[in-house]
Image (cartoon, rainbow, N blue to C red; front, side, top):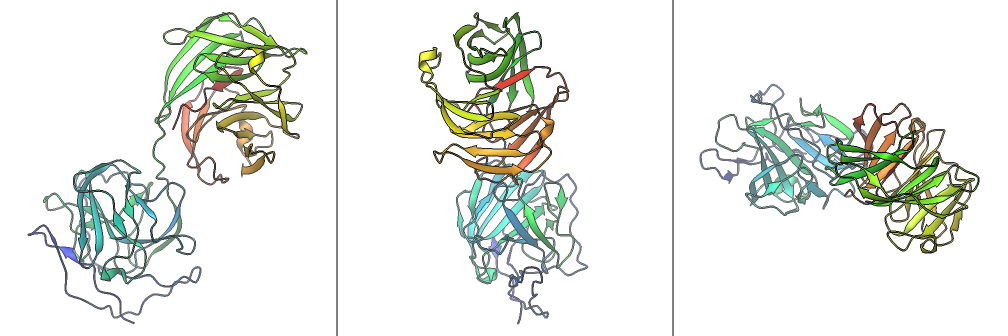
Length: 458
């Protein structure tokens, strides 16, 4: 069986695409050995010894052009350094899959080519361009500015050289001749080896990479507002830029709480609930006056007793959760500055909640860790709840877990460091898409209690 025709190129002189003569490869189509998948189409090729123009500047920091957490198969076939991509594990879902920008840039081309089908090219600066072939659809026009993660189209099988097989043909090109674009699709074009998330692909023909996971997660937006209690009873307020993970501010009160705190939940920007560590289990409301240049608060308001909870968290949508003696209860808070009459009698969600930490990731969603290192997500959906074990180990190192929303998690270690994580989809019942994002600070977080305002990060 002959290979399909070479992918057409644009004419460098005219600046538009034109078809190349049809060529057939002498070799039979490759049979995939892994997973018994059918062979994919091969586009035009460079010979094994063909030279590729060497880039003179550093290439852009590319991510895979698919949504965060997705797994894709990459093949060079006979056209390295270009790559063909299909969705793992069995190519199901390739056709119509969302295509997103692998790095920021400006759309340089968006058109239909008689052989390559729907084509997009993005200028990423520094002479680098990415080109996408055979798309089912295009949603960006020439001149459009895109960021990492911006949707640009859908994967398809348009154009004769797709061999009617859904896949993405991807090329990274370097404008070696200085004509403000990169030639693509033929032997001797300006394509170079791409690097996704620090790993370089396409060094030679007939290479395959299985289950390449996209880290094209985009950056969360918003500010995490974190309240804390120091060992001497003073309150702290810290602001963290969710996109960069940088702590932009910390202020400390001069006043102290006047009691030994046990559990803490932030209701909103200037309202905190804290229980005391006494047999009575007193619940206090802390009304913050300011946390701009200094932190000041009114004397704690005693709301009532019986709050012997070891852990408290608020989900940003009227639901206050507490764990006492392994029993998880849900309370309804119906005002921003509650009196005890504004907090409903707690309904029991379940028993056996021997968690070490507790936070809320969204309305009626909880996240917690155990002393043995489990990371567990709970959906409080009235059944009475659904449990999802996201990780099996290592999370025992944290004594506080915080989530301001948007899949952002902060883990506090007893020695005073604060670490950040990003869950691409915090409600997909899967922990494979949780990635470490480094530390906010390696030390200095000496608070005995920490709590973050919910739903401030997207």
